Length: 163
Image (cartoon, rainbow, N blue to C red; front, side, top):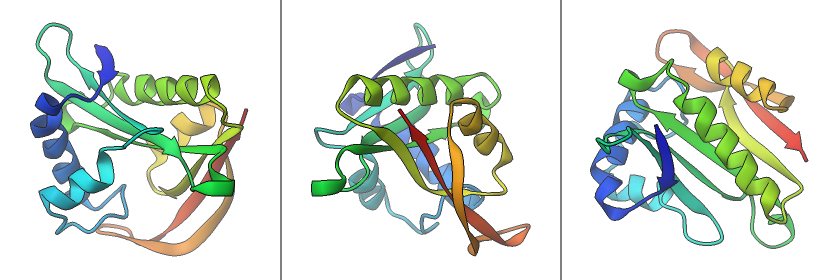
């Protein structure tokens, strides 16, 4: 697997992942009716942020994607944020771990003092464990803030990793 900056040719694969993850309605608080144009405007970051992809060595198939950048503008821009999505066929293969490590390394090499995740679905136990392994802690949970299609209302975690 290779991690690299997003290139225009990656969009078809990135859009497929975003569409599938959002329509599952289990891990991201995005509208499942999101259009391709809406997804593109949300996911493709402009500097100082960036969007990356995890691709198969040699084949170039997009396995996962991440976006990173400042969590807020202006006086909040010294704290970073990131979001990750992995294709269903690539889950359990270390793609999410690689994307998370890369995002943390990128943020630490800049002028960020930490990384904040604003809305981690508490029932997404795989992601919560991954983030905890990489130094994140749950600062608070907004109860019943996310409607899970199988579990009903579940909480959204605010998670933080101070560098």
